[in-house]
Image 1 (cartoon, rainbow, N blue to C red):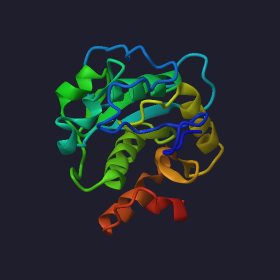
Image 2 (cartoon, rainbow, N blue to C red; image 1 turned 90 degrees about the vertical axis):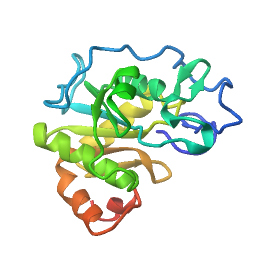
Image 3 (cartoon, helix red, strand yellow; image 1 turned 90 degrees about the horizontal axis):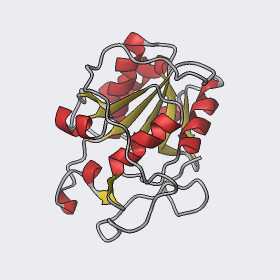
Image 4 (tube, rainbow, N blue to C red; image 1 turned 30 degrees about the vertical axis):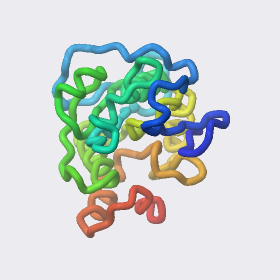
Length: 212
C-alpha cells in the first residue's frame, strides 16, 4: 500500500523542486489517456472485470505551487506531469471515473480527468475530501472513493486496488500505511460525517480516521 515516505516497495514519494525531472516512476511512464471533457454528474460504474462496488478515483490538484513556479499538478517527472501519473494509477487500480478536485477545468482536461470544483478552496485537504465524498454520495452512495494528492508520482495501480479492496470490506475509511491520510480510500456513505467535521473547523485530513 502507498505511503508518503521513502522509496521502498509500494512507496509513493513526493517530488521536491530539486528532484523534478529525475527518474521516479515505477512503470508509470505513459500518461493517462485524455477522454473528452465531461461534466461532473453521474459517476461511472466499475470497469469490466473488476468485482465489488463501483470505484471513483480523485486527485487533489488545488495546490498553487508557489515555491515551484507553477501548479504542483503539472510538475514533470521524466517528461510526464505528476498528476497525469496519479490519474493513470487510479484508472489502473480500477477507477471507472477520475475526478480532478480543485484547480480549473483546463487543468483537469489536460490530465484526462473530470473537473470538480472544491467547495471550500484553500481550506486544506480534508475540505477537498469532503467535496469529493459529497459529490459521489449524491450519485453513487454505494461507491468506494480513492483519493490521492497530485504529487505522488510513484503511486501504482496495485496500491490503489489494495486500498479500494480494504475499504470495500466495510471500513468507513482506510489510510495508506503508516496511517497516512493520503492516499486513502473512503466509503461514499461517510460524506455526512466528513462534512460535519469540516463544518466544525477540522482541517487535518486524518481527523475522520478516529471516528469512522
